[in-house]
Image (tube, rainbow, N blue to C red; front, side):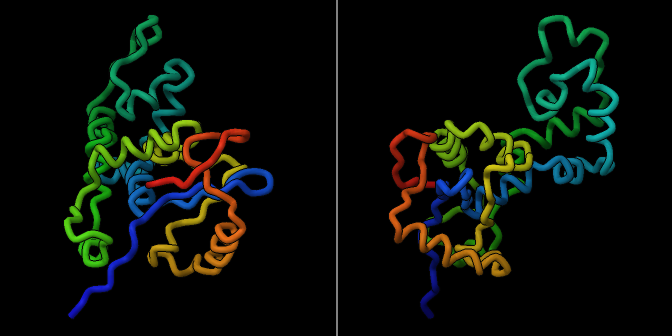
Length: 203
């Protein structure tokens, strides 16, 4: 029996009135979900409210704390870390927030593997693929925080989940709109911003 395989997934950013339409791949979406504070807290077996309690208690005095918890290499070196001592719970969060841990948590499911676009597909997302995304989207300041911090997109960026790959049929009503954009030759942006020549994005 021949398997039905989906085409190679590619992310897109379409310029639209007032901003952009962002269409991530399923892998991008899964990394985003795995990088949310709630997901990291769950993997570290911590309380659901710990992240917000840390921010409320420490962020005024230690504004670099969220970045450090998400794997920044060192605490501030300007003296603002004086008196701060991370507890075991923070260290557990930091371990699960590392890029390697996030990618492991975003591994592809068996169902996803069965419909992969290539026969040598692997169940894990490679560091090289992540690096490729970050290079392609580096001109968009919101991309890294969305992908690796689980943050929300700014108001001018509309998100279309990965419905074009069959994983979110409830959003399928938007697909004709995406198709219309492509037929109008509204080229998706790769690594530029307004005024920079756009070209198809390979994600």
